[in-house]
Image 1 (spheres, rainbow, N blue to C red):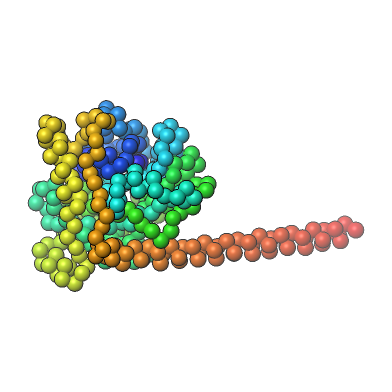
Image 2: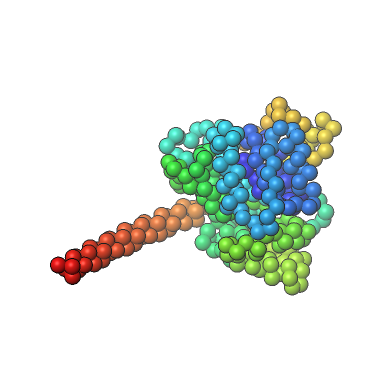
Length: 353
């Protein structure tokens, strides 16, 4: 797994421990100017022998460049078979078996497997650990093309390791020679915890996106930046937080669901460490047997999940159609240029004669 982190101390320990117990063998992490303890957490995993740590001091959040670098290192230096490019606020949940077992079953001719974002919503702050508090999931995300909100349907990708891989900004796609995507199947849920507290939002808003001259801020990022500069991020957080009344209403109309899977998985890891006398979630060594298991989902859960991923299937069809149109337009333009070039050539010959 590759991981790009900046000031994510409230979540990154749990995030890495979860994935090392879900089938990930090794982590390549880039720490971008963290000052909140994130660096020290990453260093603890590096000492345990399960993480390679890169320090990136640029303040312009060149995500695609930095993640692509890590993904290529996974292929060239660490012998990876598959690579998951994850953000610190994501937990990749396989729908049957571990991540390793799931990816090992992918037919050889496919090189990209897609996961579906599933957004967890903030609850009013009470000082508790994020996973204990954030057990409310959005059951009907906005259409994938709606970039006005962070809570829209979208895909994340895992890919076969290749030295020529290129990962898009946001880790929503990856490109490389002979990396055909396995379409219309989303065997991994990417549990997404993007809004956790006001303090976390303040750190998020201080990131380097706005200082990257080549990055166009999405509308929701512009709104976060505007809120940080105006009234502060307390009202911004409260606008998304689900109180008891909103939860009751959302459960009744089917827009919200209670989902305690990550909470329970992290409780299991925490108890393991408490038994060993270890703080937090950090693994003591590389020989620790993965603790987490991922049984096949029930039929009603499959049906709910299919309704969410249908938006991604529709989006994939639109993207493929646009790509075909672009390809046809490029061919037509090339033919027109060639035709014009031939006419100029004939005219030149006529003038010379």
